[in-house]
Amino acid sequence: MKRKSLPQVPCPICRKMTDWYDNPYRPFCSERCKLLDLGAWASEGYQVPGEPAYHEPSAGEDEEQEKPGPEEGEDDEGASI
Image (tube, rainbow, N blue to C red; front, top):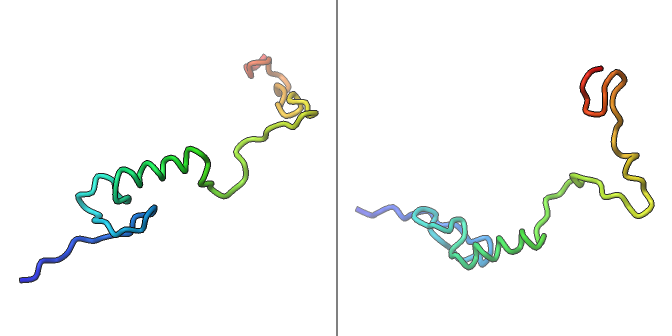
């Protein structure tokens, strides 16, 4: 009887075919490829598309304009008066 082969996937870094099961580095083929991918994320080599999560004020903008003030009837901490 022919034994079913284990599924293999290409490593996202080097494209070498590697086993999916019993692979402590999956989806990567090795610790080296895993660390290369981590380094790319850490150095902002990869970016998720979309709007920036925050706005950095440029050199002439007043930061206080960005912050909303307390609502009418509230003190500075937001508690009702």
